[in-house]
Each structure stands twice: as structure tokens, then as C-alpha cells.
Amino acid sequence: GAVVSQHPSWVICKSGTSVKIECRSLDFQATTMFWYRQFPKKSLMLMATSNEGSKATYEQGVEKDKFLINHASLTLSTLTVTSAHPEDSSFYICTPILAGVLETQYFGPGTRLLVL
Amino acid sequence: AQSVTQLDSHVSVSEGTPVLLRCNYSSSYSPSLFWYVQHPNKGLQLLLKYTSAATLVKGINGFEAEFKKSETSFHLTKPSAHMSDAAEYFCVVSEGNFNKFYFGSGTKLNVKP
Image (cartoon, rainbow over all chains, first blue to last red; front, side, top):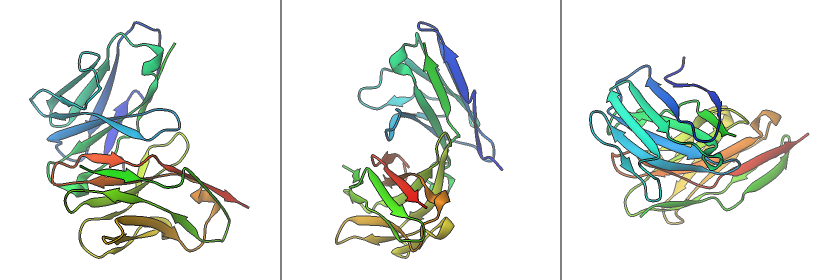
């Protein structure tokens, strides 16, 4: 069965609105969550790393005020794309991690965002 | 610093013939290496992983990969391609216990009947 869930799987929104994407770790407590972004026909790019109860660490070039990450519990992390624009259209994927345990490297099914 | 290079953006083979998807990496430390497959409009699926044990790693669906430190390579192979193997394949490197993954640019495998 699924180890990671993301909701919604698809979202279409108007430019200027904010979109929240939820990532749930179903089988274990995720002390760390990675958020990735995949552009069409491109590879995955790590956006940020969040640890439960603390602020996220963003990769270079990723706007922290635009991509708000909250990791309030060990089973839930959210990514909010604020004031979305068409260039934010992408496939967003989360990966919950039990720190230091590579075997728990599961990727979420992804959320496809289309901003009109 | 770590990086992954997938030398071929597209590979096309005939069904029943061998598959070779190339991957080279650079890493400051002993890396962990993975191959993931992504079918159209689907999530990532782990094919296999190398984490400093046996250098020849067997994965799902008949795929295997060999870690060659001297060549800094981790090429993915399969003896006989199947139509269902058509997908995008990503080589991934990870270092240390922090589990950050760095993805290669991907190789799209096309399997001809």
C-alpha cells in the first residue's frame, strides 16, 4: 500500500491565488521532509528541506516567501505556493524521511499544479 | 560536491534487446546511488539502490546496475527490453545521512515492437 500520500493530486488555479499541497507520511514518522519540483520533461529539483518543528531550509534560488513550507507534525508537511503565477506550474513531489535511514526514501505520488 | 550525469537523454531499443542507460556521478564521499523509473503521469518508483554493499545490484523487473568506483559510473542494464519498460529513468546520488537526493537529468527509454 501507499507509504506517502499527497493531496490534491491535481490542482488548477487562477494566477494570483495561493495553493496548499499536503504531504502525509502514512507508515512512519517523518522527522525530515524534502520537497521537489519537476518541470515538464525535466528532472527533479530539490526545493527545500524541512524538519519537524523547525523552519525549512531552502535551496539556492528558491524563494522562501513564495513557497511556504510547514512541517507541524511528524506525519504532515504542507507546501503553499503563494500568489501563484503560470511559471509556478509544475509537478511537486514530497519525500518524507526518517532521519538517517535510507530505506525510508519514498517519494510521494506528486501534485500537478497548473496556474492559468 | 555531488552531481549526476546521465549521458543520454533518449535511448531507443527494440523489444527483446538489451538496455543500457548510462550514469556517471561525482561525489566527495562514499555515495549511495539509486535508479528510479517514472512512467507517464505517474510517481517515481525505486528500481534499485547501491549503499556500499555488493557492487552489482539487482533490482525489480529484471534491471541491474553495477557500481564502478574507478569509473565513477552506475550504469543501468537489462538483458531483454519489454514494451512496459518504456518510461523515464533517473539516476540519483545521495551522500551521508541527510538523505538529500540529487537527480540526473533523466533518460527517456523508448521500446520499439
